[in-house]
Image 1 (cartoon, one colour):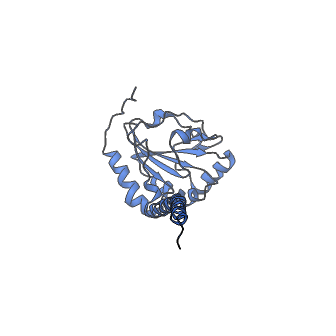
Image 2 (cartoon, rainbow, N blue to C red; image 1 turned 120 degrees about the horizontal axis):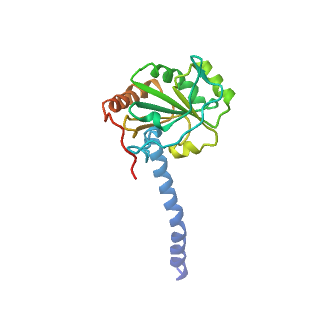
Image 3 (tube, rainbow, N blue to C red; image 1 turned 60 degrees about the vertical axis):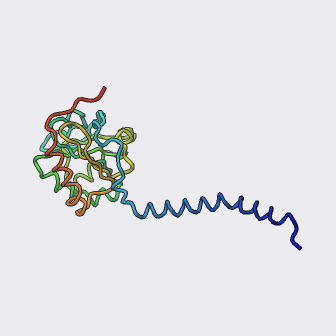
Length: 203
């Protein structure tokens, strides 16, 4: 004979299992969402906004044509399309993208500046000596503060800044031959064909 307590016990068991079931469903949805998304397409809150006005010191001992390579000056973004690459010598994907970045630097219509992230001067110089220096300026972000202001998830990351000083595009992860041709170069062309005057920084 069924006692009155058993239905109540079953209800309590079902109520207890509801949170676990909900967690399992959310975990599955999260897993599939990760599988469907390309992390390089994660949007940046800075797209369409002025590039951070962060001045950074130069990389000690780095020279080009007998002159010291300057650090990062926000004024460099005005009136010229700029590629900003966040990199480090200890970053394995940075080594993979270095030849492509150097190739991109041959385009006289753009300038490429680097933000050297939490690196040592000796290692950073050796890195550029090995692959060639694609940067017209290299700012040293020793404590990672500038990377936070740029909304960097992790190195390497690359930004396209238009002549108006606004961030036009952000690529998360290394530059590859595929995303260089399919994504980055079209974004650069779009920026080159965009506004020719620097935008004023919003109040």
